Image (cartoon, rainbow over all chains, first blue to last red; front, top):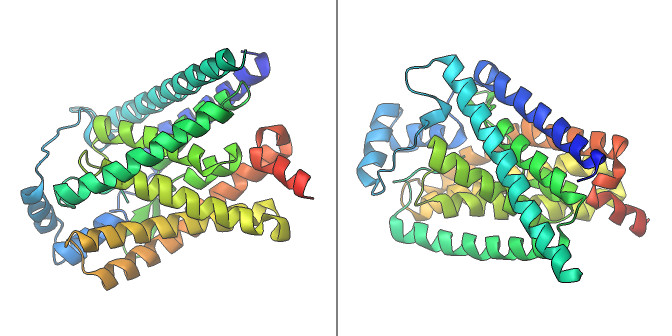
Length: 110
Length: 214
C-alpha cells in the first residue's frame, strides 16, 4: 500500500479512536428516539414495564459479551475499552474485507 | 434507532433479513466492480469512524438522544449507496453480536433501515440537488433525509409488528430524528464531506461526477 493510503488509514483511525475515547464521557445517557417510543407507547411511561413486555416476546435470548458498550466490573474505563475495541475491530474488518475484494478484482483484471 | 430482539415477530424479522441479504449481495457486487487501491483506506476509515460516532449519542429535547447513522456520508464519499449499505452491515453485525446494540433476529431490519433505506434516500437526494445548491448543502440535506426516512421505516416496521400504533410512532420517530438529522447527521455529513473535498478532493467519488457534469 502506498504511503498516502497509509496516511488516510492513520488519520481515519486517529479520529475514530478519539471519538471512541471521548464517547463514554460526552454521550447523552438519555434513551434514543426508538427507546423513548418504547417507554411511552409500549411501557405507558415506564421503562421497566416496556422492557418486561418486550423481553417476554424475545425468543432469541442472545447475551452479548459487552452489553451496552460496557465491560462487567469496570466503570467508565470499561466503556472506553469496549468502544475502542469495537473501533479497532471495525478498522480490521473494513480493511480486511476491502483488501480481499480489491485483490480479487486486480487478479481478475490482470 | 437500533431495533432489539422481541420488538418484531420472528417471521416478519425473517422477511427483513432476506431483504437485507439481497441488498448485501448487491453491495458486494458493487465492491467487486469498484473496490480499488484508493478506496480501501477510505472504506476502512469510514467503517471505524462510523462505529465510533454511533456510540456518541447527542442529547435532544424530550429527555431523548440520538446518534448519526453515517450511511449517507459513506455513500457520498465512496460514490454509491451500496458503500453505505456494506459499511452499515459491518457496523450492525459488530454492534449486535459484541455489544448488544440491536438484536440478532432483527438485524436484517436494522440493516434495511439504517443501511439500505437511509443510504438510498439520502444519497439520491444529494445527487438530485448537488449541482444546484452545492456539495456542502446537498450533503447536509442528504444526511437529514436519510436519517428521517430511515427512522420512519423503523416506525412503520414496528407498527406492522403490532408493537407501536402507526401514527404516534411515525410522528415521534419523525420529530426526534428531524432534530438529530440537523445537529447530528446533516451537520457532520456536510462537515466531513466538505473538509475531505478541500484537502483531498480526489478521495470524494461524488466530486469527480460533479466535475464531469459541470
